[in-house]
Amino acid sequence: MASERLAARLRALRRPAPVPAPRRARAKTGAARARSAGPRAAAARAEPLGVETYLSGGEVLTPHGPIFVHQRLRSEMDRYTARFLRRLDAVSRRSAKLDVDEQLARLLTDGLDQALFLDLETAGLSQCPVFLAGVMTAGRSDWTLRQYFARHYAEERALIHATLELIEERPTLVTFNGRTFDWPMIRTRAAYHRLKVGREPRHVDLLQHARRHWRGAFEDCRLQTLEWKVVGRRRSGDVPGAEIPERYHQYVKDGDPWPLAAVFHHNLLDLVTMADLLVEILEREAGV
Image 1 (tube, rainbow, N blue to C red):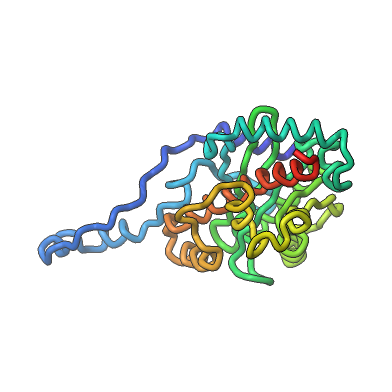
Image 2: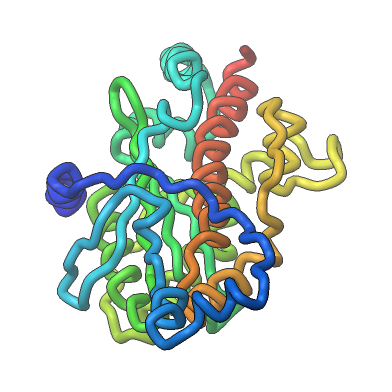
């Protein structure tokens, strides 16, 4: 499958060590500025670092050009992954014997390894390009997260193509508010790039299930609200969603990847929280 080929490619790539955030330079004296001035110094300052400076991964070729892919394991960013897997296994076994929601029952019957979790980051609202597609898949001992990144606007076509391939590989798509946002956005951008969209996936939108259980219990049913009130994890220093489009536009303009590091982390946390929320929903359905 395409995801297996991609995983093999990524394993073969050199994984550069993380680079710390650049420190703010001290103000230079006039003499120091004069010594550092000149065309060569200006060129060095203008040279873009590339997103690879802060994120391990590499370039993967698609029929529509290259794209950057960053890959992580859930256990690399969440020390409670083993506990999450134990809870998921226990509630899956229990739910199989109970009358839970038909959509969730089908998800468990097919197996979570047949589901693709998806979360998109876009450069604005409708008609704006998708620049980051985060996907997550289940494994026996860990879960794998991949992020497809368009380093400039022209790479969006390759990103949409790669995402559609992954959706085709698995019968079930799991999102949060994806019926309203993520899936329509994929279809819209595929049409813009004249890419063929295959079958309609079985879609499990966790927002709909969360509203059944917690509507009115909290101020809203946003993912981060549920992450804090239901999952019990509160983010610190997360980038506000409203700032994400401007950070990407600025990256395309000046090539500085550092402000985007928080956007990648935000997207990864959204995916991890979706899986945690699924466990919470299943436990409520099963009466745990």
